[in-house]
Length: 392
Ligand SMILES: Nc1ncnc2c1ncn2[C@@H]1O[C@H](COP(=O)(O)OP(=O)(O)OP(=O)(O)O)[C@@H](O)[C@H]1O
Ligand SMILES: [Mg+2]
Image (cartoon, rainbow, N blue to C red; front, side):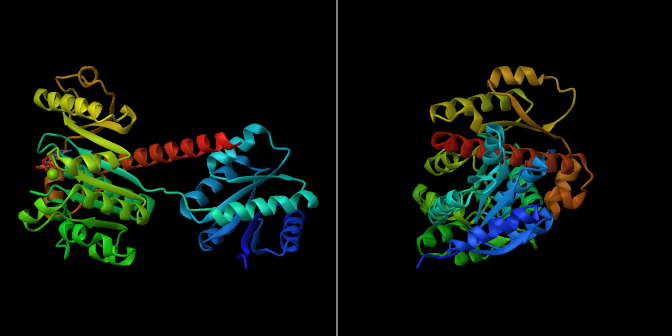
């Protein structure tokens, strides 16, 4: 027997809630498990309800309803959202779908039409797979000592703190990795063990092999303890690890080594964003230019690459516009030079925000994480909308 739909109704109008509830329950295949006039209370309930269909009325307070839909979509990926409105314009429908609604139902509800709406919902809900939302961000440069690890570590910490979602941080510097040192960790397992066993580990076991950073939602995979082990890891194993992590994490941050080999390329291919790290001096800028040529050969679109200037000082001799001209890429972000805070963080094995959250570098990392996550969400919404557009 098909499973009942668990339904939650968020609508300020009591009469409308009652009609919807009656129609739904008369179909004999839906159960209303909650109804709310207050969106905030309803939102909390939705987050606790796992797999469910949520009817959200967007007729009044449209902007508030839209942000509610976005929040539900981001925070309960098993919720299937159906928007409800009276006299909705095309613009309203598009905005609502773009925010994350999967269906649109017009008010007033007409009983005869409503049966087919429920059938459609049941069909869609039955086939509904939670959206693959994991995003992979890599830090890369073909030059050593430029700040790849500092950036990967501090960004991963900020993303975990900001989103409260699970973030994985992987050290792919197989010869000289130092992610674990930057976070003062002594992991029981490293990437070589995970690579050897990835096909046999279920999600729970995989999570146990990763090293959790304090009480946060950040989990680390460190480089192999034994350098010889690193030679045995294959690009295929890296792909398997990433495939498994994608199902469990909202973000994966990869600190990619300077070596360009098949493992590095696998990680780069899988990345949604590559943070190409440079500092403002001529040799570094030339190397960055060569990285761009490599990315071009690999067929990456310039959207995927974000040029980041690290250890940036105001009044640098070389102007940002000159760098952009040479590298043929806009500078996406600048991280200030703050040697003392950075060194103190590395020596204590903590992120910069634990040394001084008010420091220019800690504030900068927080803003950077916010900008990246906004960018990735917008990309995701646009993708969903484009898919939707084909079927509208
Ligand atoms: N914004 C910054 N301001 C000042 N110093 C910084 C900054 N970012 C990184 N550093 C310093 O630069 C040095 C190199 O940083 P990091 O180890 O992160 O670079 P890397 O590119 O990962 O190096 P490697 O290629 O050896 O892995 C460290 O000593 C660090 O303290
Ligand atoms: Mg490093």
